[in-house]
Image (cartoon, rainbow, N blue to C red; front, side, top):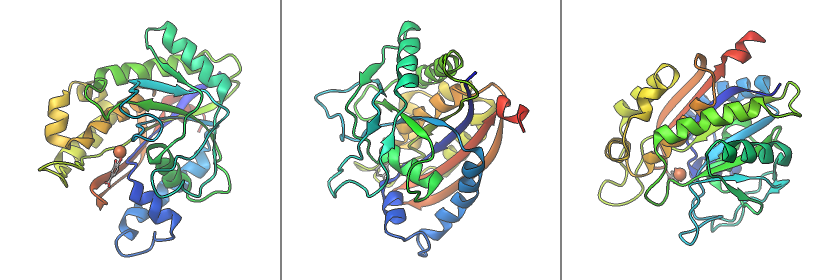
Length: 287
Ligand code: DHB
Ligand code: FE
């Protein structure tokens, strides 16, 4: 049976990708951030998931204000690296898993989540930077990736409750994948933590809020789903709303999880960069 056994949540700041691509990980500015990623990369090499279902938001690369899917799933064989204005990043192509993606689409839609199905999906920093954070610079990405794009750009985004419920539905869908013999599935939630890129509060960071969010994610995710959009905007900043995607990851894991790694660093560009890794109870059984 296929199982969601790993959960990773991480910020997806584009400048982190640029630092990796341009060999700047050891500069005084970036070193403290990347030091905290070392343990995560070691864990990732050992955990070695077969496939990553990666919840991220597109930043006007594949979609723009003409078309705003709330939840979209990429079902293609491959996903090109988006050109975000300075040429596509020089990183391996992202290889999909159409059989599982279509199974997810079917299961989620039949269970009431009206997913948008996407065949042509260039992926931007929201998806690629988390891969670079976790894998560094491999010749090819070790796992297949199913992109799950979430609208957090244009009001109204989905609620935390809906995102958590989507995670739960993903968990169930993965378990019923017929070709999933011992398939190890990771779910990523990306974006956050507190940051605001616009307006009077541009540069907003709220470390006490972020710390509490990290503390509660393992044992009180339902409590986190009760944070309203207004509270998220106020406390985590306008782009801190991306944190709802962390709840998709948490919803996809077992009720009990083990935290295996955590890192928090301010600043990374304009963002409080957070990273947290969980193993679900199934992963523990096999240890
Ligand atoms: C930054 C953070 C983001 O989440 C993003 O999508 C773009 C930029 C930043 O901190 O610069
Ligand atoms: Fe973002």
